[in-house]
Image 1: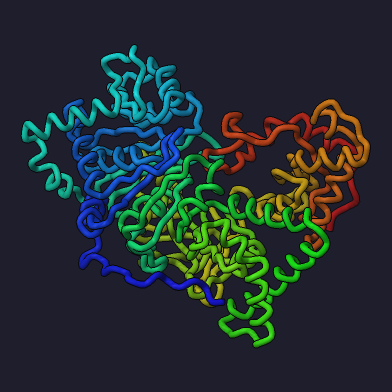
Image 2 (image 1 turned 60 degrees about the horizontal axis):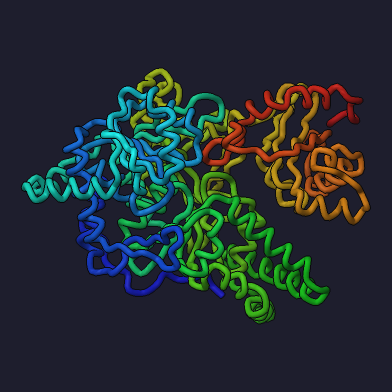
Length: 624
């Protein structure tokens, strides 16, 4: 079986690629207006999908934009969007862009205090909020935000709403009133007057080491990235997507929002992250963008199902897995597999892989992965299963795509070559540098921080360490700031080790530490679903998880499982001690960024006492 081919009937791209996001919007409305579906959502408590056409979206965008102008929003003002993925997010975004306002997306998972920082730093004059809980966050910090004049609630606001709080229905009505007064006559032409260098959005970075910085991205930054990415990904109007990563993140916003809309892909917003598995079967998408954690969970579920079955089922699965991966080695090398292997692979498809394909809806052409490194063994398994994952790489500051693998021949273990128009080079210290139209304008109101990462000749310092292979594909080895340098001078890249350990069924999360220490240690959050079962099998009695992780037998069990996953690692790369944690890391507790990256310094400070006690214990054997 070859990698799935692009569907037939691809419509011709526009003669001139759009240079602004407003041009992208109206071009898509014209080219794909014949379709019956532009976006769809499944409202809470509703059994069916609510569909919207391009024409309906265009009308909502115009009415929302006209209403914003009547509410006092002017060109250059900042307008925040605090919402889960839904059509209202798309409408708010394009409405802001159409009137020349700069929108500021905010993660709906952020607590009120962090939202207040972003709103104050950006000077937002208005905000769209989705649900009652999101509205409650804004109302709780309202007194701290003198610049914020208007709050627009996508869901019906309470009857006690003040004059500065409007429901979305009222906003549409205000916009319709403006249309009737003739105020919309030049709306489209004014929207298309946006300039490529205008700041379209300010996206606040996750801030793993401190307060987030506002990344200013222009229309041209994002549009050029959309056009270049489509030269590689080749999406079109016969494709269907499922969107569930937060639109407040540049990866989903560029790839799952602007790129899909420009290509005419039918976008379906998942009900929530918890319903993705069910929504995949309902929507039957042909393309999905996600972070590696989704693929890791899917892979773990497949393994668990195989291991929990009978002996015959287990043997068939591992035979199919081995057969598929041998077949994948040939295909990834650009060679046809021997005839006996092709026959075996066809049988593996029928017995095992077809079931996994059915769980994704049965029509998947490919997945796209970004935001964090994708383990190579998981990428190869999905490729063998006929579900290729195209791993890419980028940052908020680069709009975001720098590199992405190609469907025809992905290079597993790399993030692929740079997309058209993007330059990449490796600095003498191994840092990845990039230059091109995709690089940000700068950090909002932070010229000094901008100069630290952006050179005068346009080269941007990514903060990542990597290397280019002879074919021009980029391999990421680690974050420059995450590199652990032990007291003995050994450099350790923690991310690959953490990823390997998290593939063990007894491990839910792991963080490696040890900078300027004699050796490395590992903080492990156990997967209590499996650890509880093992402890009961061993007749261990424990009142709660805190008591469980203090048991010597449990600590020894987890240490054995971790050691099993790291047998091929050098001694200095292997954690010498393990600290078990009762609770997983979370955004709410400040341990994770909104994109689920671990704030290592904060985690280390939080568990400083336990970590110091661990290092104070009897030292392990010397490291090499």
